[in-house]
Image 1 (cartoon, rainbow, N blue to C red):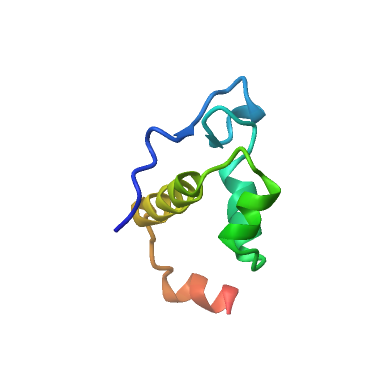
Image 2: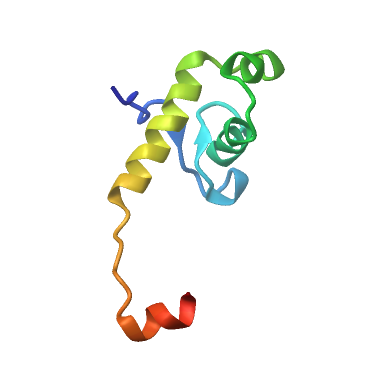
Length: 85
């Protein structure tokens, strides 16, 4: 089940140039995703950023999932597919 992120992830053009952040921090969704992608365990992230909670990390994953889920993919025509192959 995907965590609800709406109460934990905010976008404010005045903070971090409008990148999605964890509410009440200047920690971006991008940073947390990068740490996870690099193999850092949730427990280690929480240790290194003690003001974060497990629910914040789950909210980041929920935000990322819903962002990718809404992504629209348009297949390339054969002409363009050859160019990118």
